[in-house]
Image (cartoon, rainbow over all chains, first blue to last red):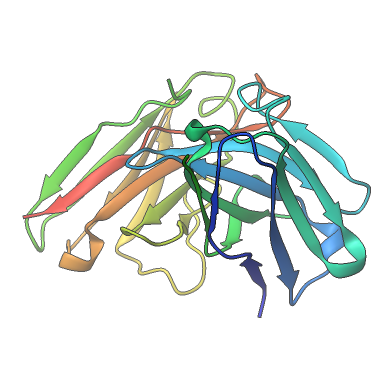
Length: 119
Length: 112
């Protein structure tokens, strides 16, 4: 079974750093793009960026460029989303999802990681 | 502001059919057959319902169908059931961004 399993919920203070993870299983992790999606409380889905673990080619939405870093460790089939200095406005649910090999749909999705940033 | 435009809400009674629209431009919806639809229940991760405009993944009910005309894609749900109440998001390939994908703003479906 193809699966993406994300790391658990986090509670952080403004200014702290954070790295959350998304571990793939049941398929060749290096052969599929992984995307990250933000969902702020009560709001819609926003594409943040996408990475190809095979060669770490990474693309960001202009809204998130410079705000987060997406990376992957193919040796452990895991993609990451990290912040160097969190803000309260980073409070949101974050999802990872696997992109189709030849098209632009995403399936499966991880279960989500809730990040809460509060002083 | 989302690149793709969806109605904020739609509603229907059990057994009826509803359609959710997703309007873009020739740089995304209108130019390519790469529209997908996702269902999201409260507190749950999104679930792929339709891909490449009109294809259903294995396990998705045939009450869900997708289509496209010009710059507008549509998701139709027939024989509405209470369990269909959820948020629905369209997504499309876009040639306007290096990210290549864009979401709609989402539509809240209420089953009356």
